[in-house]
Image (cartoon, rainbow, N blue to C red; front, side, top):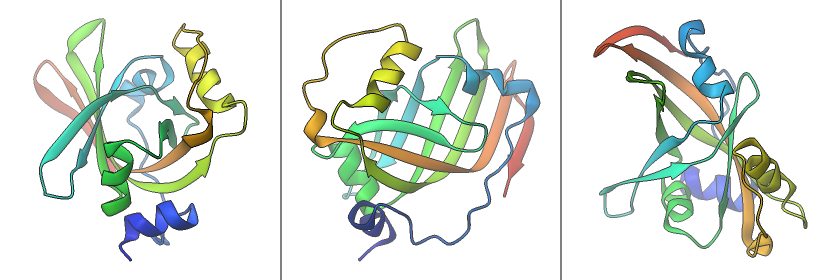
Length: 158
């Protein structure tokens, strides 16, 4: 079983390193604000896949919701490594790249409370029709790369 599959099967990573990288203070706001992240994963055939995602940041971990039936979930089951790109909507030359590993996968509750919380964070409110297959994915960042005006301004890694 690959590391990713064990995350999906057991709900937690076989990666025993729990250390997370620290976000550069200059770009912490991009994690705290309700901006969109582009999640990059690798398909089983090796091709890249990128999708826009909502996320929540608790100061050390990123959490996102997804369903067990979509390709991104299958990609992370095969390989738990991922990257997120977050562009500042107020300054298109400022961004934050987050590299990390899927640390855990848990079923959302029967009301899809985590997903509803993300809806609130992003100013949306609609019925969740796929509650029975919704999961909460926790990502441990292993590296941050902050950019401004086309150049790298800060990095942080484990």
